[in-house]
Length: 426
Image: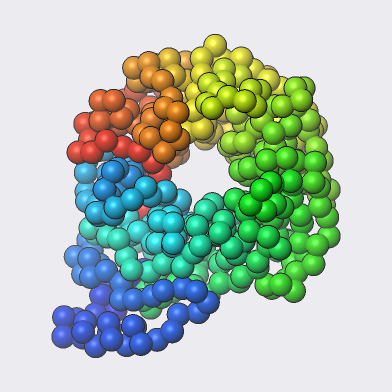
């Protein structure tokens, strides 16, 4: 029996009556999950679900020892969960759940806020956040990519690419399981990424444990039945991905960027023999991809001051010197496609992606220096709607920036030192 408040037809996480909890847990444990999934009874926190007057966006951040959840409007703490280790966060694509990459799995975390359609209107609910036992077993859990209604999980240790329809997540979790997935395995394991495209084709990176060389485009299909239809290996050190307006998909290289669009792969070369664009941020409102730009191959940690702007319509590159360095967690996009970069001088720069002009700089945090250890906390940018959220580990704080007004509108002291940051729409 599912808990179904009001007139809701589908509640993401069911909560059986107390007397049935034991039996439900036994039945769910006894049933085999498809593929390499692990499933068990969902959290009973849904029993305390309350209807909200509107969607309730929430933020999720990691800290040393767990995850914490904040109301995105008030910045007040609403819950969390303990979880040891260095954990990475990725939205699951349903507006409610977040994947926690724990190394040996992509584990599902329930933010406790969601909205359900009901005819010509919707109902929104909130409950306590909870770390579920639902997870995709992984070998070195890596990137999670959301695109074209699909979530694609990449296993760095095996090359397994596992994808599912994000629209099926809520109903599956309602039944105490994960959605059915399609699995493709790359020829060799590597630190990579995969993107399922609008037409069902699959973009996968090429590489092995020693090197990464480029991308391949695979035909639409299922599993290993996919066939290769295009490839480009002029992309040493391939890393990251982003999608631009018009459906162009890019990956970064140590000598430029590859752009896949309209069935063709185009190379946008760096002006330097080593010009790495390994981290990117795209927007469905702009044909331009924002990327970092590093030129010192021998550096243990390069602190670049230039960014790259790659126009996927013209296959052209524009480098912009910001006069301040930044980190891989400094890049974001605004609601109209603005390029956003959080500098180590503490300012959030709002940039016209077509011209490269800095239209505004919003002071947000104190000046900071990027740690040589990439897992260490550092100011992190996350954008949700018209608000840019910026963590400040040095003061254990979070700041909300109104991108339209160009100013910090709210700040909050956190219970923990924040590291990674993401959010859900609720």
